[in-house]
Image 1: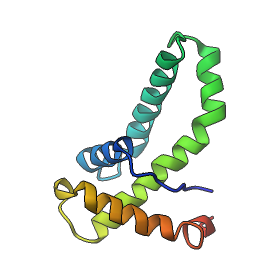
Image 2: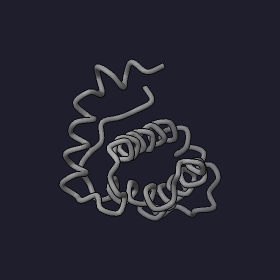
Image 3: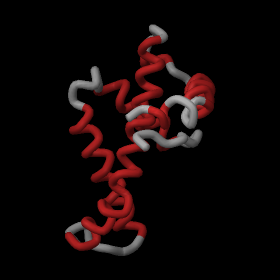
Image 4: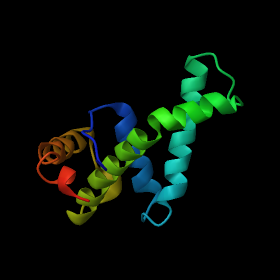
Length: 116
């Protein structure tokens, strides 16, 4: 699977807003890497692990890297749909985000999971 169901939470909304602010999707790998680095730092901080512990970082990437990238791909789908609807990026509201997310999640099993 390349996508996941998105939850209505502040982190996902914040990541979408960052994509909106910084992307014309030409530099998404850099932003994706920044998001993943942040997640690893949070993981280390919450678990009292040094951010320089290469074994722990490798373990996090092995266990969480692919699902996290699927999560970011799913946020990019929200970005794509909002863009194709012709809306101004800065104007997306929490309510619009939640409605759009519900619609995308509703077709995940029948459409998104069928993309190879």
